[in-house]
Image (cartoon, rainbow, N blue to C red; front, side, top):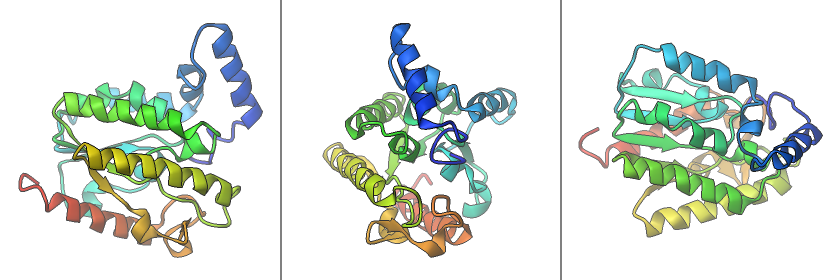
Length: 229
């Protein structure tokens, strides 16, 4: 997620691509969109050559997840990071094989901000999120849903887009509560008044070291609940 869109692809271009998808019988927001992100193929090709074949924990996300070395942050050697800059939730869903092949016990998920800044309906995002969660559960991987982070006040369209972040998180939190799934509300620590705190970000969107330190501490609290970790 190098920007709120896919590597600065204009909104009108994404709209045109969606129309083309419809003309060819493909769903808008499907492969013709997430594969337009140049980071997607690059990262997938790296997954194919990596020698590490197993991990207890997978971090699934976009550039926010991709922005730190999780093993070093948490002092572990059993974490694999599967974040792709600029990725959307449909992209997550399409690459679940690269999560499951690692046979993890737990998968931390964070996504949705790129979709929200591509003006996708929150209900649609929620359905895709559920599909991701259900795939993990079906394969005996414990999902941990992490709240989609707000952007800071100075980020474009922050008030409008953060209202959508709030709606998505409310749906996710309720779903997790009803289905006995861990929901980690990072906005409680990283945000104030429904905006990302300035002191935890370097560009009003991505986290800095302070932000990752807090995130890491919150993950450690979750792991303490499960003796296997």
